[in-house]
Image (cartoon, rainbow, N blue to C red; front, top):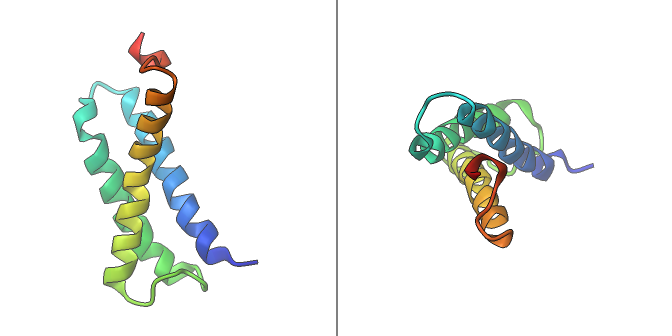
Length: 92
């Protein structure tokens, strides 16, 4: 099994779950993309060291893969939100 691509998807899922946890706090939601991007960056660099098939061979590329994967978590939520007409549970 190619664990490299699965690890990139895992970064997105972890960042999405972290964003949902942050939403439960008093922190302003405007910080969510920065938090997801930063967490993705850290996870990308860690993934390069831990996952044998990680799709990045150097730290800069691994950081970029992580940041994009982290930011994809906020984009995924926004796509879902727009598809259902802008009404999410936390918006009501």
